[in-house]
Image (cartoon, rainbow, N blue to C red):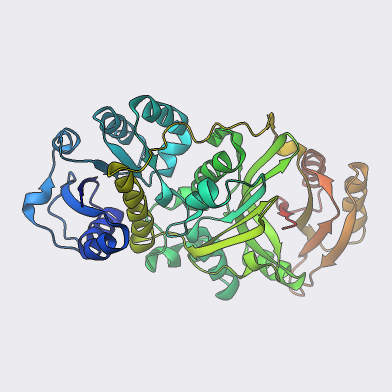
Length: 431
């Protein structure tokens, strides 16, 4: 039995989880796989902070090159995050004949094609299961289990922070700021949670999922991104009254040779399985032509779920190191027939619209007239009573409408003297 040596760069939350797993699970992994994983070296710029796992000082180093240049290290695990110097670290590891495991979604979203092409030229591999969905094996499912399928759609709740905040707004009746503050206090949200709540984190993950599912190297610029910062507790309440819940969804949908890519708050039928995903959990819903509909559900982030995914990648690469056939190259560039990414203005959807209007005769008529001129048909309307206020919410659901037409209509509606706040529009998704 050959021993495969592992070098880890990044000894933070995820790194410490991977180290703990490699140390505690070494025997069981050896028994299950026939591969002996040995932790050879750990590199981090901070070696003094307390970690939840104890390791020998002989394993620790601040010198990245000491890990990258060690001829005995077979696999480098990059867990520092960000673009630089993570990109340079991965390229040097590949150049030095080492395979790489990473959970760096932002880097792969922005530079994935370059890195996979480089890995192919070096005859090495990059694995990245931990980059999307925490402990959910969604990358492997798309690469292997669903490889015979032509993927038609991918829907995902892929950011636990936003999902937790929306749930807090629903249950606790907190406004967005208070719900986010509570999430930070509970340790669910980072101190700077901007990329979570503005949708960017979900967009990074969608780029990877869509690239794997549809064969085009998707970049962040291809994706329409809208966060949850404009959602109010009463939007969640009104949606619930109408039989829906609000989720931040990452959506990729194929229409013949065109692809829709978008991240935004979405009304989802309350009886759909995605609607039941609570708190920090993630769920990814995939439609394939052979397998039909599949739902992958689990803990979407955190030390242990992500370390589970990272160690799985290490085991796969270790098996290659001891004799199985290696698969390298740009896994995002197979021929899928996609020729165009649809712009958000081309999207056709039903909409939830919430307006803040002065309670006076003729308001509904004025709004309806503008919508009709833009060929937007109203499916239902509800004027919520507010006895102590002159300004009342008006909630509408539309039939299918074009995004550009809706935007033009709302721009005109918001200029009416009876409208006292910018109108909120949320897409309704048929899952």
